Length: 295
Image 1 (cartoon, rainbow, N blue to C red):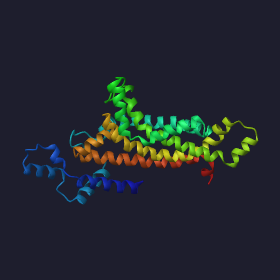
Image 2 (image 1 turned 60 degrees about the horizontal axis):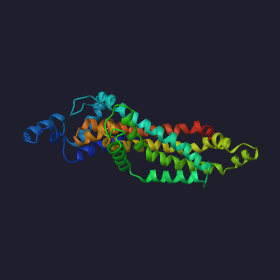
Image 3 (image 1 turned 135 degrees about the vertical axis):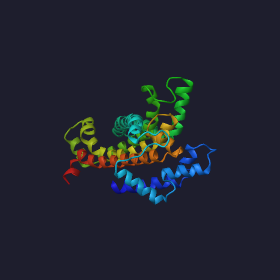
Image 4 (image 1 turned 180 degrees about the horizontal axis):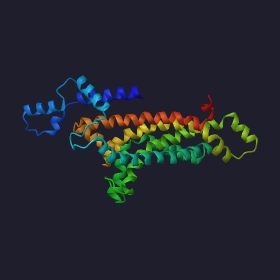
């Protein structure tokens, strides 16, 4: 994790500096003299070589100084408290939706293989995987906000503001979970221990729910760690479209405004969350399958 975060910090730091423009072009008036711009860059240390700026950045982090926003003057902790809460609400809602809907549907599709239910669930999941989330967001806004006036198209506040962003963010994850759970269940249903349970007279529902589901969840858990990364990546688009005041919206705004401290901090924070999620997924394997824990 430390190595990944180190390389991520280098990539983020250098990519922001190599991108066209700098904070002086955004924060200062277009009519500002070049001498004023140079003085502003010097005050921020932007006139130093990039590697020197990076070592200053690492030194400040080691001292616990995460910097302040060049736009608002807010410290990173204040921004994280304000915007992180909204992203956590949206991300966890989408994550729970994709699992609470995707896992049971995948189990049902496997248990009713080649039936009408299986074909319908598979068709919907393929459709969910094929629709780009930004296009789905625009469709929902058009129908439920513009035409029907049922849901607000942007902002945050009550549950109504959360419905469409959460659905868009969970759509692809739900479809992938359905496909993965169905495939894993079908693989497990062909194992010898399932035939043994059937020979003992156990009902099909008992076999599927209490014998096969636990083992079939291992690929889904592995996928969950990756899917959290997808949610974080897609949140940048979804929060921007719906103007949901979360970390993704803040990060996009910080990159546009060349707010280097905010962009660097929240980019590394998102990388840390993704890496931590994959670590937790690895640790969860043992809880689901005792064979992994004993080995």
